[in-house]
Image 1 (cartoon, rainbow, N blue to C red):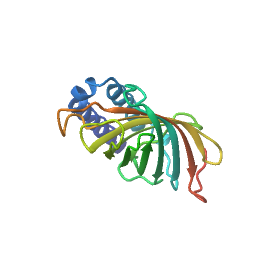
Image 2 (image 1 turned 90 degrees about the vertical axis):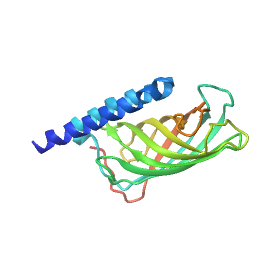
Image 3 (image 1 turned 45 degrees about the horizontal axis):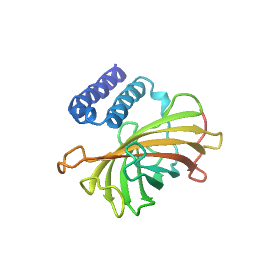
Image 4 (image 1 turned 180 degrees about the horizontal axis):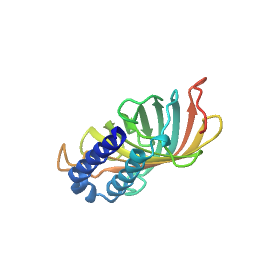
Length: 202
């Protein structure tokens, strides 16, 4: 009974979030797709609690293309991220990181990630974070304070290391001004578990 009530509350909260964010999500195809995919994954997590697991965290390195969709000022993107392994809120794990682009744009971010084992080796992880962005010689996003939303798809090896790709959207959802071009980042990602983490494949 407790599990049923918990799942209902999670899905109800998700429905409210979807209702509030849908107008802004519809205004941007990338944000819409990320929102819909995240909704489905949250539903999966609510009904399959064994799909998530606790570990001791990881260091994550990414390289790829900044502004990959609009290609207004497409350039190289390099990121570092640290993810803690224990739950902070429900089954979400906290993370923080920073990135730099080939046009001298800098950004830092921190938020929550939900890692879901769809198979023993395939992990899909939606995330949401607050971001600080300084455009340098790159694309202007209309505000230094933004939101970073996205999904990682990873293949996890037996030692806990993983490789995959990530797709993220950064914008301020028109909350901090009339200019909100947004940008997308598509990266190749390598995740290295913290030594002696005890992470194992289920």
